[in-house]
Length: 275
Ligand SMILES: O=C(O)C[C@@H](O)[C@H](O)C(=O)CO
Image (cartoon, rainbow, N blue to C red; front, side, top):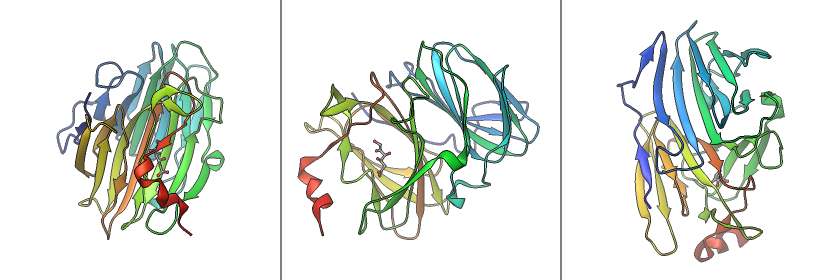
C-alpha cells in the first residue's frame, strides 16, 4: 500500500470543455482508493457541467463562486457563499444520490469539489445550507484549527460520505495528534479512506503532511502545495503549517461503515492531556 500526492495540474488543465476545467479527477476504484472518489472543477461564468451518477453518491461543494445545482426534480439556485475559501465562512453544498443526474450552472466564476463514494441505496437530494454547517474550534496551544462539518457522521443524509473543511493558521498542526481510521473494528476504530484537497493563503505556501502506519510500511512526509490532493488509504495523517501561511483542506472520507471513529497514535496522545 502507498500514499499518493497528486499535484494540482499546475497550469495544465486536464480538460476544458465549454468553460469547465477539470483540475483533479480521481475516480474511486481507479486510484489507490476503493471508497472515495474526488474531482475539482473550475467553471467560467455561464458554464454548465452535467454528470450522470451510477452507483455513487456525490456531495457537491461550492468551494468558491456561485452556482445553481439541479437534479431533474429540484433546483437550488445561486448557492455558494464566498469568493475564496479563506473568507473562512461555511459554504453551501448539495448531496445527490446514486443513479441520479445533476447539472451545475456557474452563476459566476466558481471552483467546485465533487466528493464521491460507492452507494446503491437512493436517498433524497438535499441542500446543505451554509448556516446548517456546524463550526467547531478544536485543540489548544499550537494545535488549533477550525472545522466546518458539511456531512458529519451524525447526519443521516448520505450512505457513506463524510465531508469536512479544516482551517489551520500558521504555526499550528491539525489532524494532530496523529490519528488513523484504517481498521474495520468498531467500536474501537472505523475503516475510512480519506482525501485531502489543500489550498494555501498566500498561495506560494506549503504544508507538511506525514502519512505513516504503526509498522512504517507507509511512512511518507510530503511538502504539499496549493491545489494538491493527498490520498490516504491508511495510516496516521497529521498536517503541519509553517508560520505566515494559512492552510485550508477539504477532507472526504468513506468506508464500509459511515462512522468516524479514529484511533490516536499512542506515542503522541499525551498532547491531548496537557493543562
Ligand atoms: O481535527 C482535525 O484536525 C481535522 C481532522 O480530524 C481531519 O478531518 C481528519 O483527519 C479526519 O480523519
